[in-house]
Length: 182
Image (cartoon, rainbow, N blue to C red):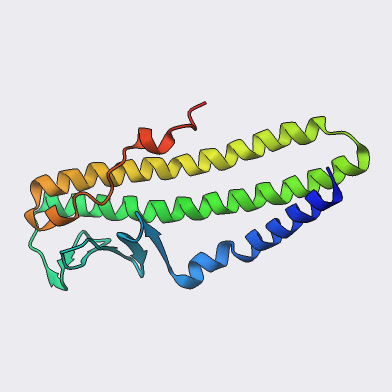
């Protein structure tokens, strides 16, 4: 590996670490589906064109335009599932970021060691293992998105107030995983 490539990796790693764990927490939230879903302050906010914002809390309460929506126990359970799936995207996103930073740091260390020793065999093997860990962490997000979609479909069928938000997540888990099922 050239010195220029090594310095580039070091710079990228530094930037990733600087933007890592705490930056997500310092903003206090996560954005899903191009801003249509926001997870912040223990609430999931849904935004769509031509409809007021909807907010779901951990207890399964739905508020549309700041007004509580009456729900039955089954609907509340679905709203709780939606909340849990959306917050899982956030948690799995953080875990994926941490795995990526760890992988980058280990790759830089291996690249330096390889450049000094001339042995690239173990470096390539560890790089493949490390990248696989990052991909596996990211695949959890695909499952979370599939859970959101399944739950949003059920909510739209059972809760009229939720219908305007029924198309936020359109892709399924297979689409999310496309190219990563090797």
